[in-house]
Image (cartoon, rainbow, N blue to C red; front, side, top):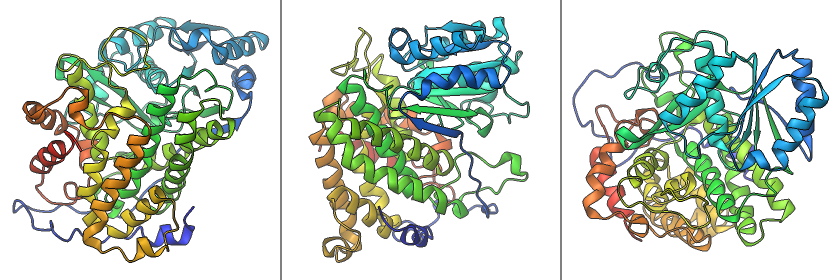
Length: 469
C-alpha cells in the first residue's frame, strides 16, 4: 500500500492541462471548501451473522423486515440470520422476492409490502440489489405518501432532501462488491428510460454492516468476478474524481452537501488500499473461489472501497454503465455466462469494466501523478519504481489503458462493447443515456470541473474507443 503521506499529498490535483478552456462563457458559482466523511459501523469476522438477532434485541426492535432474494433465501447466510432472530425472540417477516438488478417496478413491490407491515427495523441479507432495495423500502416506509421520483437523483427525479429520521437498517453482504453496507446509495433500473439511476443520501446508510467471511462461500465464480470489478472501479474512480474543492456549487446549507463530494484525503486512503487489494486478490478468486485469504481480503476491499467512493464518489465508468445495462434489455439482450435465469443481463461489474481502459486514458491528463499511482498498482510495482517515475505524463494514459485491459483479459471480461452486442449505431443512444447521470458525471475530470461542459463530445469518443480494444 502506498504511504498515507504520499496519498494525501497527491490529493491536491492540478488543473487539467489540455482542456481548461471554458466551453461556454458563464458565471461560475462558488466552489466547495469542505468535505464530510460518513459510513456505517462495520463488524467483520467469521460467523458474525449469528449476532444479528442479539443486535435487534438490543435495539428493542418491535418487528423486523428482512429482505433477501430467492437464491440467498435458501443459503447459509439467511439460515444463520433466521436462527439468530428466532433464538432472540425477535419478531420478523421475510420478503424474499428482491430482483437481481432491481427496477422501479420491483422496488414498488418491496415498498408496498414494507409499508403494509410498518416495520420498526430492517435487515438486508444479499448483494447490492438486496441492500439497495431494503434502503428504498426503509425510506418510503417513513415517507408513506412520497413517490419514487421525489428522492431519485436530479435530473431524473426531484432529488428532495431526506429530513425525517429513517429506521435502523442492518446490512449483511453476501458478495464482495458493492460496498452498499457502508453507503447511503441505492441504485435501480428504470426500463422506460433505458438506464439506471438511484438515490444518494447519507440518511440511507445502514446503522451496521455485518461483513461475515462465511457469506461468500456459495457465491459463483462469475458473480465473484463481476462483484470484484465493482470494487476495482469504485476505488479507481473515487481516487481519480475531481477534488472536492473543485466541485460546484458550494451548498447553501450543510444538509445539502452531497454524499458524492469528489476525491478527498480520507477517501483517497481507503480507495487506494482497496485498489491494491483487488488487483492482488481478485485474480486469485477467479482461479479458486474457495481461496479463503482471497475471499477475506476482497470482502475487506469492498467495504474499504465503499467508504472511499461513498464519500468521494465515482464518475465515468459508472455513469456509462447505466445505459449499457439498461439498453441491453431491449437491444443486444446479452446474457453473461455463469448467471442463472433466462433474462438478459450484463452484470453491473462487467458493465462498469467495459469502458475502463478508455475512461482512464481520457482522465489521465487531469492528474498524471494519481494515475501513475494507479498504474503502479496494476503493474505490481512500487510507486517509486523507475518504470513509473520516469514515464512521461503524455504516456501515462496509454500505459494505464494497456494495464487495465490486460487485467480484464485475465479475468475473461468481454473485450469491449461489441463483445456484448453493441455497435457503432448504438453510440449515440449510450451517450444520451449517460448524460442524465449528473450525480456521477459531474465528478469526472474534464467534465465536472469545466464550466458549461456537459461531456457529450467526450462521452462519444470514450464509447467509440470502448467498442473494441
